[in-house]
Image 1 (tube, rainbow, N blue to C red):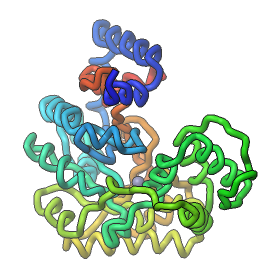
Image 2: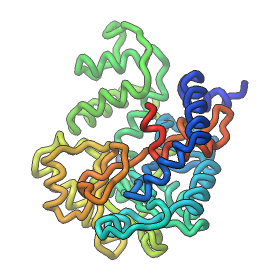
Image 3: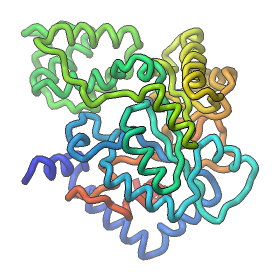
Image 4: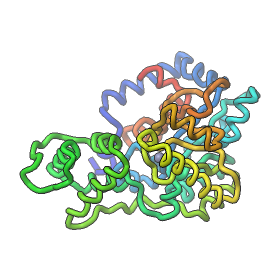
Length: 360
Ligand SMILES: [Zn+2]
């Protein structure tokens, strides 16, 4: 079995789960339940969440596999959406949703988080070839400096470690001590990158940055973060000129509910002003980093002047939806591709329509 095949299988979860999903998808298609869910999409707005579109070999090298979709799979997904749905940026879709204007085809918005260069290089041209326009939520500090986001640095650090190193990192996190010296926390368990990222997300921004810096400083060579390249301001201007929406996603990608009121306001307003400067237009949309928000964060986003904000909770947005916590459906390689690496068109329909949400 080649590396490619093995990794797709690995990233796709257990084969039993996958087979079960396939059986349920086929049953949904043959009994009409899938079509029923697709018809229900017409009563609201479906927002899809993507992060990165990369050539297949790069997808397999990227440690955060839930955030990437191979170019060919993305092409097929866009072709399906172009022929079955009315696709528009979130800004316009939200306006239509509120006006109550119904459409013959399901309304879908395609969104990208973070601001990676592949959005401009791969995703936008594929969408434009199908006549589609999307919404790009960019982390302004990432675009401004090009310095990798904290979770890319953390993922590269993890990826470069062997099992003992990973167990030590987890032990360091749990004990609050960044030293990697022998003899401390030597209990070896099997940890997944998801455990590592979840534990880091719990930390305050400063504390997490200090911890990652301290651990990295102890390594003989810094971890390779080569695939985490940001778009440049000029790319954002071109996306905007081509009819896409460019919107904000904070400055530093912090977990917003952990911030003070002042820091929260700064993340909301500085990112908006930077993006507005780059595209020479107003920015009306925001997307909560990591999908984390609470009442205080949503109120601050509204007070800062945002017309809408996207979260990561799945679901269909109805006309009565709270525009400051819009649902989105995540599209992942694990759930929209077959074990052999081919795109799973029926699986994609199941994800987009919410059919699979009913069977989780
Ligand atoms: Zn993000």
